[in-house]
Amino acid sequence: MTKNILICEASPEGIFSAVYYAYEQKLNPNTTYVQLGEIENYELFADYTQVKTDYEKAEKVDRTIARRFGEISYSYIWYALYSQDKEKGNAIYHTIARGLAKAYQGELVNYLQDPYVLTVSKMRQNVWCEAHHYMGFVRFRELKNRILYSEIEPKNHILPIIAEHFADRFPKENFMIKDKRRNLYIVHEAGKGVVFHQEEGQGMEVSAEMYSDEEVRIQNLFKIFHESIAISERENFKLQRQLLPLRFRDNMVEFC
Image (cartoon, rainbow, N blue to C red; front, side):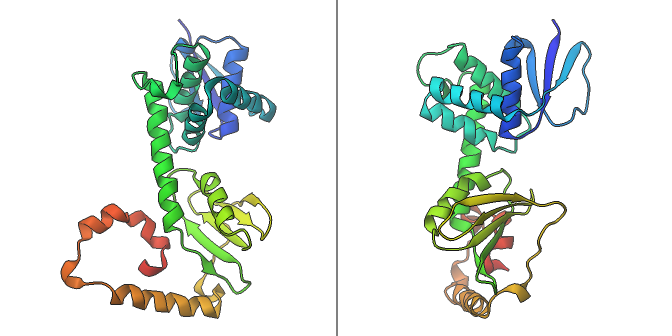
């Protein structure tokens, strides 16, 4: 039996467009695979289809998932869409196929004996945990133009998840958060919503000379405080790395 391989963008809209195409063409889920990005190794006896991202069709898939699967399963799938896992497109497609086929009774994401549902659940947990960590570890620095600026380097695409959190926390502040891995920004204007901005190349670079005088003073005081409360005799580097992984520290004032 010929295998159908659908090639699509790694974005949520790209994946949902591939899901829509698979159902539009009445493809058999047992022989269908969703591939993100370019193909590295082509398979024999397989049909390859490049699926163009269609926002209207993607929205239809989104509405169907929300209506048919319920709030919990819907949120699991959306968290998985922000995963860095290269298999997320295929796992999400087959999880949706299981749900639409009514292969299980009850909450779809509870059927962890299914390998695709289990993969989506693991991806959701990984994305949620990283987003939760960054809500506590993000460090803002005030620039001379009074904008609060922060840089992060998450493994997963968590900016859309943490954007609402910080907008609710700082509704009257102008702030920016940059995802250095993806060169993507969220920009929040005081009293307004969050806007996403993608830049080509390395994008804007912020140096210490751009910090406000008050920011520099507070940073120095915070570093002194951080050092003064440390008790050298009770240092436990293994526990520190468990509670605060090394990958967070490059963008935290107290470790710079």
